Image (cartoon, rainbow, N blue to C red; front, top):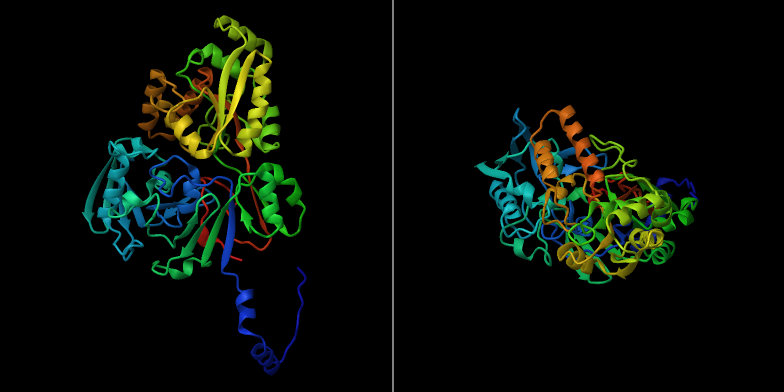
Amino acid sequence: MLKRRTVLTASAATAVASALPTFAFAQNRKDAMVLGMTLEPTGLDPTTSAAVSISEVVLYNIFETLTKINPDGSVTPLLAESWDISPDLKTYTFRLRKGVKFQNGEPFNAQTVKFAFERAGNEKSTNKDKRTFANIGVQVIDEHTVVLLNKEIDPDFPFVLGQATSIIVEPKSADTNAAKPIGTGPYKLDTYNKGASLVLSKWDGFRNPAQAKLNKITFRFISDPAAQAASLLAGDVDAFPRAATRIVAQFKNNPQFQTILAGSRAKTILAINNAKKPLDDVRVRRAILAALDRKAIIEGAADGFGTPIGSHYVPGAPGYVDTTGVNPFDIEKAKKLLAEAGVKTPLELTMTLPPPPYARQGGEMVVAQLAKIGIVVKVQNVEWAQWLSGTYGSKNYDLSIVSHVEPFDLGNYAKSDYYWGYQSKPFVALFDKIKTTGNVTERNKLLGDAQKMLAADAANGFLFQPQFPTIAKKNVKGLWKELPIFANDLSALSW
């Protein structure tokens, strides 16, 4: 955009201003923005579903947490003004922000914190971090002071309390948050046109009205890469966080757009149902891994935007060790392992694939690679809600491809009922030790041991750490440049 510099006298400027219609100024002051999203959320309560698309809409916008995770991974106060940690790393005393209200007028206080966390950890909870909250005791000291007693040592606890599963919900509205979310954040739900778009509007009752610079944010749900590109080029979408990698090339040198390639703690895996025969045999799982050419999959699934991994952990995370050499690409070894396991080929398996391009594109690569060792894979493309209910919920699958984006999710392998059916008493014992070790050096060593154990057990097909591109108009400000968690902090956005 060309800039013109015009010099006017004060009287001339006044004359020009009075001559212009008032709507011209309104048009120049942008107070709205349209964001693209690949996946539509399955609801609007992140405490009831594992879908990360929910937090992309509501976290820090409608709902808030005691702490806030920043783009650089640091943690700062949000609903808590400050906190103290006991020397044994198990007792946290939070001093809460005063004068905060929920969007239905109810007050935020220590009692609501107690309600939210006990709800998250009770027997009927469907919170994916239920185990974490079940291990927390909550003591109300006074209206604005709450003590959390953690049975486990978790140096990352303040970070965990800033994630979407830790939102503070209001007791009267908690059961209807999936459809009518009520939080303490700067935005509230305006309209929701399922299958197409969702609109959030600025909440006038927010404690700091000036914090949110935009009055209205529209999310448009567009899963097809070509349609994502078209929506940006047409101006229908202003910014597309976590856009398809396939469209990056056509925007990278376009001066009208900015392209941000963000690192993350995500793990893209070929999920293997360990509970199903013959996948319950470690030799079969190792054969599958030996048949996978990770570098080729990264090119095909993510257009080269990824780093190979050998376990459920990524470079840059505390205690990371390189396990890519445990199950290297080796077609002949893969065939021998299948023979040792007594598997007669062709072995027919089913792979369910959710909508993201990395899954659908990656699925094509995996099908072709497994065919070389006599494994015939039938692909079932499903919508995200179907994946959550059938694959994740009912465990009705053999193989699947999905990115697990939670930074601290090794503990899922200690859950006997988790969707991939991995059961290992040695891993459970090791993970329990990790959760009770406060010494950083020793803890990191144990984290390395956990990664090696998962790699040796071929618990899943560990593929790559993805990079996620954000494509936006050049003048959009406040976009996250890194992704410690998946969130869109709308109050940071402006023109």
